[in-house]
Image (cartoon, rainbow, N blue to C red; front, side, top):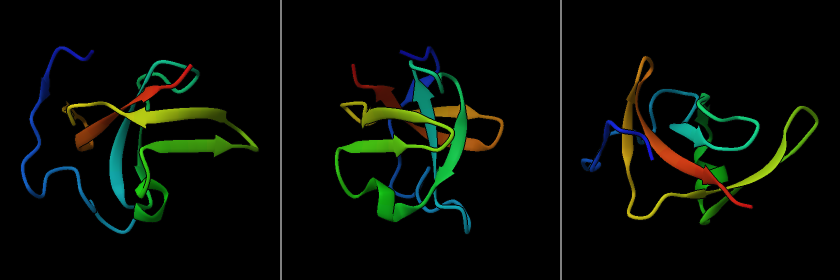
Length: 81
């Protein structure tokens, strides 16, 4: 788990700009990457990448954690094995 994780506030990490919510990937081929993910992809407990560049399944870390990143606070999603 990231060492600087913190509890989320009501609006932190949510809807950051037109690109959606900031997500920090933990584990797997995208480990450490931070991306804006559209809200419609975050409506369930899993985030599925089905190509063409990435394949994998991530799930929201519970309890929800935010990690400070260069782009701002990002919600942590962990690779599902």
